[in-house]
Image (cartoon, rainbow, N blue to C red):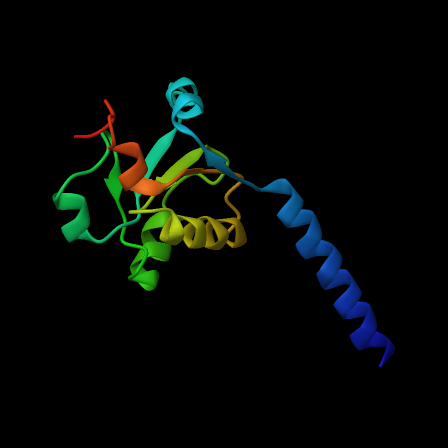
Length: 127
């Protein structure tokens, strides 16, 4: 019994430390414009390929979050220490994707506030 309790305490501590090392931030348009100039930054559209093809933000790569197995395979190819910017249609999927990415060990994740719908209203970011 002591072994199990010790294991649970150590596991909880380890998970807590890892969670503190990763960041998931909601990012507004003004802050995005200033921060995407980082040379190692990556922009990922987590919508379906059909949604992506109908329009996407400039320089965005498409990795469909709804296909979770493919999403994990593709997202694991990125450097977890570099900033990643993500968005979806309205912010729901990208929030879930950011949570998953934190669990996978990504350190700095920026979720674009309001998703594609918000970012393409009067925006120079659309492609």
